Image 1: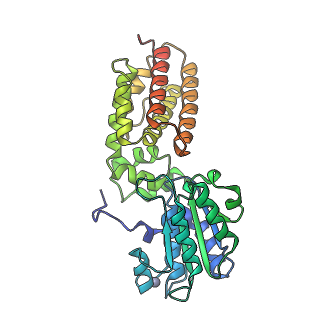
Image 2: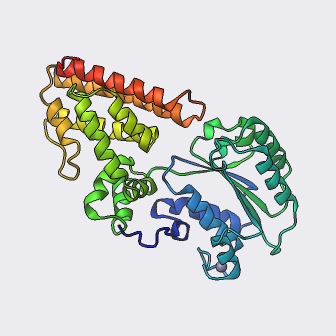
Image 3: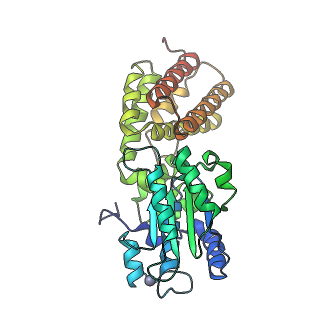
Length: 349
Ligand SMILES: [Zn+2]
């Protein structure tokens, strides 16, 4: 792994290669004094939205910025880097809490109403803004309705649909999109060992920071264990509990990403009648199992596509924050998977 100091300052690297257009858009507005007081920063997770806004905040507060970047060394830049700049306030759900509480929003309101310490811009960042509960969203709305001079709010979310329409309508939108595989792979080269890049990119569906996190946190090993358990389940040799327990250990959302990934590989294998590339061998066992299916290739591919639909629905349920129970969702998905295998592979269930 290239991460030798434990915590790389990713924000110092932003904007990333897939964020150039957004950077120029917002920088142009800021320099022309046309930046909206509130910006909704949205797009899928794992794209570096937080790092982007953190980096942009450094630039806004920097005492000697270059044409496009913060200097990185002035007092202001160092304060931001240490999370101690008095003109920058960041809130997010507290550890162990799913919600952004009203007291946190009140702190933002107080901050907005204070005068700037450095005499320049003041910036408030609300990370995972979709976690605002009803009362905190209402409190924030008041702040959005009465913008304070030279004060900027950034609401960051991967679920903008969960924000109140009245909040969304008061924000300018800054959208981030998933880069191509080539861009994602390119960014990871040098940061990850070459032999894990392809599987990390696949597992993260081209979201570069998620790919880095998956590979760096041992998630690739987790995925291999999970796929191995899934393979045993597919052979009807193991109960659903083994993969369900592994999913619980690494997080059900991650497990769903792996299921989406492996089912895509299986569909490709079935339709092309070829084994997966050597880049990731954890899927080989499953692919050879599916190549012996009793039903037609087309029928099998259709069954897997339907299963992917269920995975997408489950992913939405999990991300909504209002989900009933991640373990129940996973048990249901594993049960459906074993049904799919029993019907397609002719296993005695
Ligand atoms: Zn600076």
